[in-house]
Amino acid sequence: MKKNIPVFTVCCVICLFVFAAFMAWYTVSSASLRAKTAETTQLLETSRGREERQWSEYNQAQEALPLTQKELDEKKPLADEAEARVAALKEKRNELRKEKQALEEAAAKGTAEEQPDPASEAGKEAGSHE
Amino acid sequence: MSKTVKIMLCAVMLIAFTLMVLFGGEYLDASRKYKVLKNDLADSTAIWKHVNESKLVVQKELKEVRSELREVELTISESEERAAELEAEISQLEKDIEALKSANSPAK
Image (tube, rainbow over all chains, first blue to last red; front, top):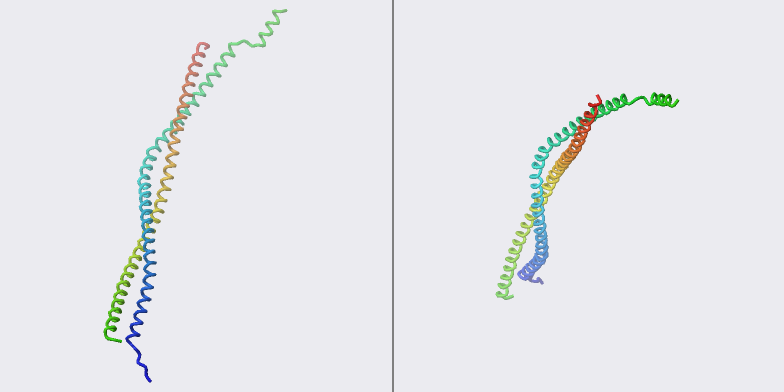
């Protein structure tokens, strides 16, 4: 005896099962996707903030570099000039030292010539005593 | 099964199908947005990393120039100090020489 298969009922049951499975998947996946999207949005905001800060720091350094370089270029000749001046003053001081030394030697020589010989003075003194 | 029940079940299946299409569409849209966000995040991260590297290079260069500038400033200040000392010494030496000259001249 052949049994009549209720095609419509089977179709209905399959459709409802498919719908139930879809809803289960959708609920889980949708929640997960929403969470991932929220997290990524937050990360993106942080990254954009970081990007902005890096740009700002880069621009600051980029602006400061030519100014500092200019200042350095302006001060370098001053430093060279100051060093040259010190060298010139040292040279002058050395010359003056030599001159002073020569004068001191000349003065010492002059004094020695003026002063009598201590040995002959002693002899004279001895003769007068006798 | 009566015809009315069949029609009702058909309506329910149609509603279920419509909901599946709607939710599926919404999910696909959200998934596309998430992919765009992820790409934006990757781009932004790559940009800030690149800018950071460039910034470090410029900052290093700036640091070197600043250090050189500090050295130059120090040289200037030290040279000025030394020059002042030397000038004082020279002035003293000139006075001593004058004194020695005046002391030597009557002796001659």
